[in-house]
Length: 158
Image (cartoon, rainbow, N blue to C red):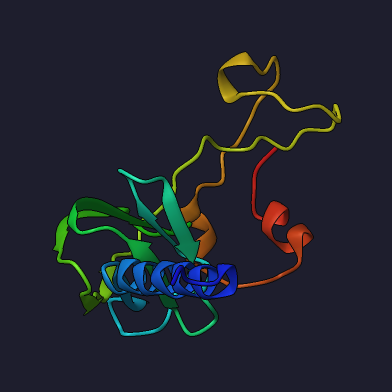
């Protein structure tokens, strides 16, 4: 006797679910926490898998979770504004769930000085036709601390 069409359909569905289940079990999971050198969590840090272009941002506790990774060796990149980027190679095995925590080192971001003049337009020290006094970060950090900009420019000649 030939099987009924409903039995054949049910058999195919069950076979498909079994295959999908084993495919999900074959995927690796990478999770962890991104912190600074003091152990403070870094929210919104980027955790990126270079080879797959898959990535996530950390939550407010610095935690992340990457799922559906195939077994293999990957270059992981972790970055956040104000911190040095970390790159590390990780080998993940089929079905593995691995914790990978990363500590980022702070990085000072240096930019050109901003010149404040009465002309209402931005200019650079070398291009200024008038006398200019540059107030660098070292000068801002020493002496009296004030949130009033007028206190600061009161100590500048010119």
